[in-house]
Image 1 (cartoon, rainbow, N blue to C red):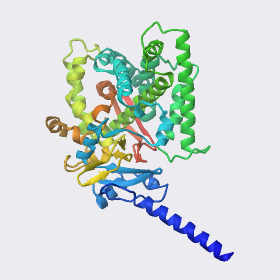
Image 2 (image 1 turned 90 degrees about the horizontal axis):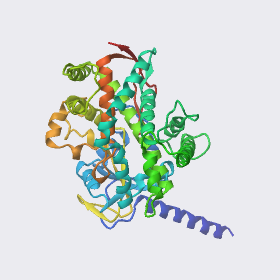
Image 3 (image 1 turned 30 degrees about the vertical axis):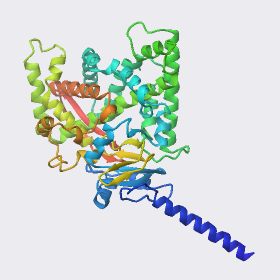
Image 4 (image 1 turned 90 degrees about the vertical axis):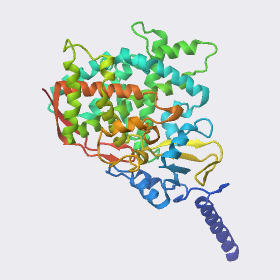
Length: 471
């Protein structure tokens, strides 16, 4: 009896050791990039999510670049992964969308954003949805939106100037969410009985968190926030079916028209997932960028002066000082766009962009096996001293030279390739208009907060509180 128990124990031990060996030494028809797979199932997930307060490359990435080079393997949330901090390979991944790679996100992200979210769709369906979004947020539409964006910025700045202080992340998020929700679904928070944005706030708090779906965890609250927001969006869509919007066309109008076509490829589930992602992406990323920009301006008075000089010059060229911004004036904001690019480069709001290899791929002596995920790491590219002199120094003027050289391979704050962010122009317009309204009419002073934490996404744990006053 004892011998049988020993045999079974030995068999189990050998099986476990064999499983661990296979986990740490994955099969590959070639040479895998160097690296470690970490613990079985867990991988190196805990190290990846460990918070840090540096503006430099995330310690998890930086240490592995030092140890293994700019292309290495790891495992996150149970998934084998290739991480690239190599500008050439990162650019190659984006350019080979649909051929060698396709958009992919971990199962936890799919659960959060919806199984049919735009990031998980490919080919014709993705191009179709991208076209729908550009109808609302493409350059031509933005020309018409410019007065709305300026009006929203002026209204909120006036309101904030009457307060003792204002926390920029939350306040700018409210400003942008209200504007975007109005444009997308004609949502007016002052007239609505339900607070749509409140559900997105619960969603955001658990977005970059360890994926444990147990009541009380941030991840569970995130999923509950999504569920409530999706329920509200579905209810709004049903209301629009019954009572069409006669004042202005919005995204719901495009969706309902398309759903009624016999040959449509759109479904209500895809449309609602797209709506959710658009609302989230439009206000969360832009409000983080604006908040980071305010922190930078508070820390760099000479940059604030140069920015103010550019916008004061725009006003001085007007015949009527009370006129609103024109598209021509927006396009003349050379230093402002350089400032926005430099803000996006150093803020590194998106810590990783995921793709999946469609076949075995060889690059610089390494093989990326078919089916493996690849994470492009924009911060590592943006903070590469070979591409950016003194990469941790905030220097908008570096973009004069970068623009001449063409910076796409070394700048991917808005993605790249076929999936270059369709909201890029909208984000830049919102930031430029907000900065114009701020520096021409107001002064501001940082009164509290300003610390940053990355987990690995950008956060402001104690906020960025400023006092705004009339000039």
